[in-house]
Amino acid sequence: MKIFNTDGTVLMEVKTVGRNGNYLEFRGTVMGAMPVKGRLTPEEVRSVFGLIKPWRLWWFLLSFPFRRS
Image (cartoon, rainbow, N blue to C red; front, top):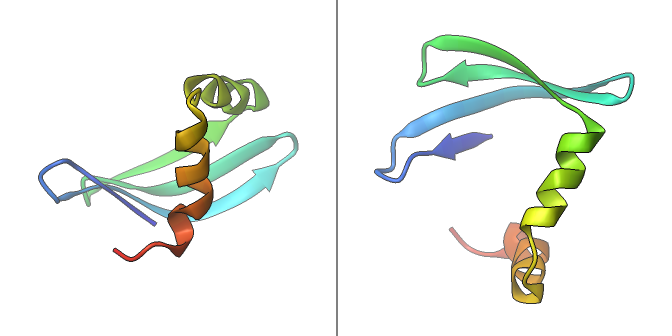
């Protein structure tokens, strides 16, 4: 999965996502060169749900994988 910058360049590329106990771990590269390993906790994922308040944004996120690029 690639995460793009606003100018269209690749900001981060996630290569693997896995589970480690109660955590979600990912590995990838930042800006094509620097390797990174990260961890998401359940508390952080719950905090993301607090950022998505408008109902229209939830609908957009549910339909997002089925949209054309």
